Length: 138
Image (cartoon, rainbow, N blue to C red; front, side):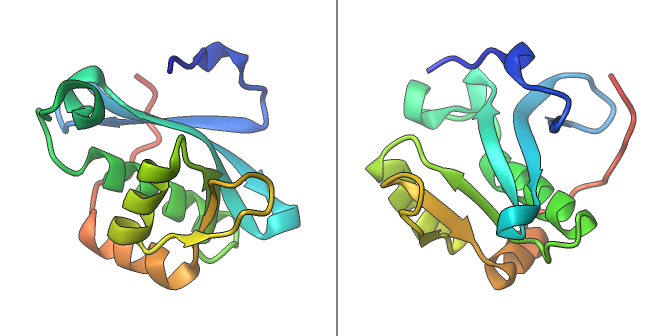
């Protein structure tokens, strides 16, 4: 599935994950502050093709997805949501991966694959997937 990153409005912030000292994007995540849910909403998250094991069977770098969730948790904290995020997984298999790897909780509120990563799980993600935060534009 391909995402048109230009389709997001001004309310959606897009963050890139890059290796320090490079401009090579390893993953992108689009986030919206969702005050009604007291959480950050993940509109879309994607690894670069060489980091997508679902597509290629191998990854150049491990942990890109976890780092993207860590970014979402950080932005959630900045928006005073305690790190809580929610989103819709692409399918049942990926939802189960998020449950197993990131402590996601199935919510099923707006879609059968809707999930929430609560504050405690978000805190654990941020402890495991550390990074240097930068507001520099590429």
